[in-house]
Image (tube, rainbow, N blue to C red; front, side, top):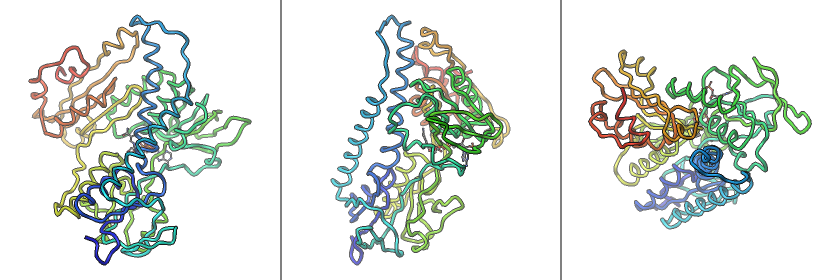
Length: 447
Ligand code: NDP
């Protein structure tokens, strides 16, 4: 396709969105190059969802090993070797990085391991001194952790560094009350750290249903995690080998590690977006229309850099839709409604659609069905952790939201979300026979 341009498509960023877009564009006949300054795979594969989930699995063994005695097992001395888990996880990240690289190459995409900067509407400069031109440009540079502006902030780490720690900190303070804070609180706590979460407000995981959030808070506290609400950093300083953290509303605390998990900011600085005339929003995000097109006709953006929904499967869909729209002559826009999501905390929680509060605000009267139960495995294990499933329906019993906390909630939610997306009703669930004994059967037995 490329004629007067070097490439039909030049993608900046080989994360989830950029990789999918580049691969599909190439299979549709485009001449494609993708520039990546770090590692092919992006946040999800290299320093996010994938290695995090492996740590979650690793952490869960702590409870399984505790519970196994009630199931007849006796084991010898338990010992956790962080370095072994870390290195195994990082080795698998290397494998995935190679797999992503090969997939792009096998589809004829040129990978440029450099930081690319736009120098004009169609021109890109590379640190090697090369300049290339492209008919279409896709920005898929993702986002990075936000670090609060406070004295001593440089002494803290973010989730990026958490995967590479030399040792599990004895005491860790996690700032933020969102996805990353709750997931890593569970991980560190199971590995034996004394975990404290500090958050600026009085709520965690604001987009999730209140009843689930309360349940997670309650269980997390039972597991020994401390919470400090209404806490904002005053400063972090060294105190011998430890760190001393001062904050509003609370006494200072001494810890061995401070981890910031206070949201993520779009990576738009230093990309030459001004030179190309690309418009940014208030948070520095690239503004796009429903086809992921910026205000510049041939420049598009997908994934976290657009700050629509910061989730990998969404970025992948946006990348796919972009390629089909531009190179497949099949305009497609991603539907950003009714997206299921999960927090891999201990226990995990998951949700799709409207929370009870949002449904009441939007629809007025709603019907709520729920099951509050102790999973069979927890009963025998003597683990006093209850699961909670909630179904929120409109007055005609059409489901507008499902929310779950409990073992395997994200796995169960993936299937339940199909029903919500398809517009099914409580009656459809009631008409479906239970699989007994499972936790998921509670979904078709809700009262
Ligand atoms: P979240 O948006 O989930 O949570 C951010 C937290 O930080 C909130 O508690 C927020 O408080 C607080 N916060 C935000 N800004 C500041 C600030 N300036 N000072 C102090 N506190 C602040 O962000 P995460 O960093 O946990 O994760 C980033 C994104 O990555 C998530 O939104 C999610 O989209 C994605 N992600 C998804 C995962 C999954 O699917 N399982 C796992 C990990 C990340 P407040 O509530 O008051 O605003």
